Image (cartoon, rainbow, N blue to C red):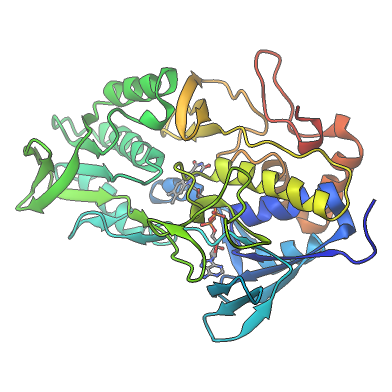
Length: 410
Ligand SMILES: Cc1cc2nc3c(=O)[nH]c(=O)nc-3n(C[C@H](O)[C@H](O)[C@H](O)COP(=O)(O)OP(=O)(O)OC[C@H]3O[C@@H](n4cnc5c(N)ncnc54)[C@H](O)[C@@H]3O)c2cc1C
């Protein structure tokens, strides 16, 4: 199937999109593709699980070098600074230049503080949020507001508010408005407008969380939040805000508002051989599951370029999200068209398997296997799934479409 010399793929970034790309490329093209991963970080931290950290749940972490090597790739420590598309070279933060045949930019976002003076919820630094939760629980503070600014994947704010409301209730605190939530979205999780958004709103109401939707924080002074556009005031002696995502700003590539511009197959216009996926790309919704779907699209393009006999995979954005609440989880899904929801759904039973927060067709079962049997055997199991689709771990449930492995999806 493949030409003699493998297609050389340089991937900048060592996160969720990259790992799905590696797995999908291995499944579709095997040795016809040779991958080098450029990453400043030696670990892959499962950031979506950071919302559980202030409540005692430790996010999973993985040794990136071991996984990349296990999948037949090479990890090159370093950070991408800029791209020279004419020379087909990247420039690293330390000034080194590397040539590329194909480049996939998957460097994620940068973030900025949303509310001056507030606790910023940062995966890897959630201790401050845990302190706030304890203060509300033991009465050292009486009202906390969680803030989801425009542009952020807002789900963590709803999860933090629901968890905190549960803890506050257990602690016997009955202060009205002890937990509130300010979101720039017109309704809770409006990105999944319809049944999913309605279900999240009901959960928040049942937990006693006071919601201020369609509003942004103007100021926080003397224990009062002032919200635009209508100058609503909210008493809050503690504020925890998700950061505002800002684009990675890769010099040399066309950007829109700091994010790398892409076409419908995640190729970067005007930069031959360059693709961008995940949070770094300018697709309007930034979410891990979507990042994996973008990776799968690019993997199919590259596998075909490398000579593999696989179909060109279209991008059909389907958000799958698990809302952790501190009690029973809620499984939310929506089909998107150009970033806008066309239909959404909520269920208390997982409609996809494994019921992972980041619902990547290759990534979700792989990481579970790594947890269970280690990298080497997880890679063997991934290869087995490819060879024997019937043993694939990701199966559709009888009542609805689930996630299917790449080779079984229509
Ligand atoms: C608190 C929180 C909760 C979330 N919850 C969910 C959820 O429940 N479900 C879900 O699907 N998504 C969730 N998300 C979103 C999800 O984490 C992101 O959409 C996803 O991680 C994007 O994947 P990525 O590979 O594009 O970026 P990342 O996973 O952020 O990876 C970027 C990688 O690039 C590396 N890097 C950075 N700069 C450079 C550089 N200059 N050169 C080379 N490498 C670089 C980083 O070290 C990192 O390895 C959540 C996010 C947060 C913050």
